[in-house]
Amino acid sequence: MLLKSFSIRICMPKHAETVLITGGLGQIGYYTYLLLRNKYEICILDNLSNSKFEVPDDVTFIQNDVQNKDSYKNLPRIDYIIHLAAQLSINKSISEPIFDAENNILGTLQLLEYARNENIKRFIHISSASTFGDPKFLPITEDHPRNPISPYGLSKLVSEKYVCLYSELYNLETIILIPFNIYSPLQHADDPYAGVIYKFIEAIKKGDTYSIEGDGNQTRDFIHVKDVARAIAMALESESAVNQVINIGSGVPYSINDLSDTLLKLSESEMKPKRIEERQGDIYESYCSIQKAEEILGFTQSIPIEIGLSELLESI
Image (cartoon, rainbow, N blue to C red):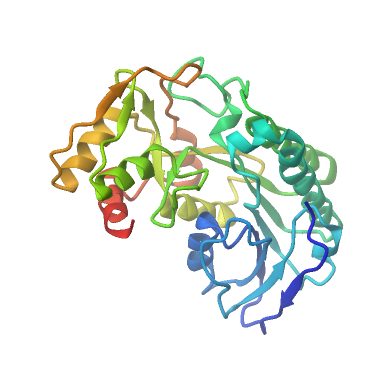
């Protein structure tokens, strides 16, 4: 649903170049802003639907939706775009697929049109590992077949295709980054990104027993949000990354059992999780290859999951 009215707050420039971060008040946007603010002017476009922090004093802020053309009328001169704004919930995409498509496909298309018309220097698009669907082989490389199993995964894939097409048709410099399972100290229970990590920590904190589905040997590739933001900052300044699609993850499979054991150890809890029947349709194993990220960006994760989980236990 488009906002009928919106607010604008202008910040006086101090730097030569400006980066527009859509969805800049979300968890990835926040840490990206922190990394870039001392070198670039930051402009944030956000509708506040999933915001995690207050609008900083040193940014130009527009409260509106990316799919609304009026959002772009009062922007300052923009040099670079980091596109994070999206409908993130898989469940909501299933119950409201049109809403999902309007946000993720049409929103991206409106932003690409702005980038084309304003001769933006570089467009960084943040996609999703949901575009891959069930893995056909492991680790998942960037050329793995794309067969999304949710409207969310499909809308993110279509958005990727539009980004690539605009790069070819209009000579727009683009970079597509595909983060895997993001975790963050800014997560809340209702966050699409929260997932199993938050649920386990919340239960441990409350002294409640939590459940592990199936044998617990299901694997995921967990990556700290600060590392995702660092990869974005690297991509912004990497010439070799232009027009590339790059996975961002740890490159290491981490099982649900390992996750549970680590959290219980860190919290010094003697809780015994329950075992319940495996959920049908769930992806069993998933982790990505980060060879391309290493070669092109020089990126590897800097926050091991044990340290990241310890931070989450303190923050939640």
